[in-house]
Length: 242
Image (cartoon, rainbow, N blue to C red; front, side, top):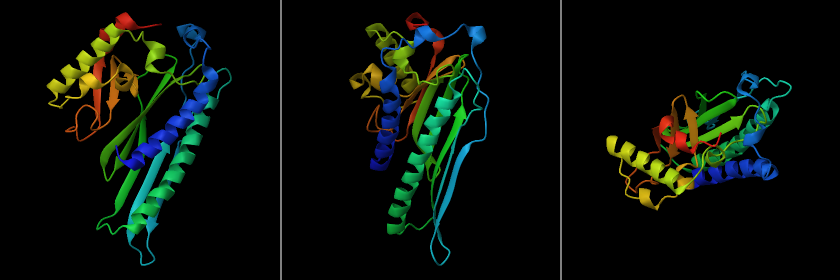
């Protein structure tokens, strides 16, 4: 991960942490209503950012773009909290754009540099919103961001909120990641040094699969790009908390 990506990730993590400090000890899982009462996400207009860095003589040095989701706010749902989270995220991205443009303007790149943040919604379980975001630098996926929200409360959920993180669970996850790496010819010589919390730090459910997002050079120094490991949810059913 580059220094710039690390700084951006840390700033986004700080926003998440600030929101979760108030939630400790609240019994998140026990407060969900029955499945037939769960709200559904209704999308509103995206938050967007598009800026170009152009010199006085008209040369385009860089393009920065971003899109973040917004929901229609309905009474009795967590849509307002989710919207506020992404409005705060957009402020972070605006500041990141300023920093990146300053860096680019000091360099002598032969081609226009591009930096984009796109998102898509995955097939989340009822009552949840699963948002996958990707940062692409010059057209190459550089880093993934993931958010899993309760549509009831608007709070984010971690892997440990949903699964019993026992030693057996860790072994099951590690084995599934190893099998995926072997099948996809991805080096993973650092896999045994990674904790369960590191392997599941960025995750999302998607239909019948659990997706793990693992940054480049995490599984191995030879791992050149971030990867998405898919694990069948049925393999983790024994560890579900709710």
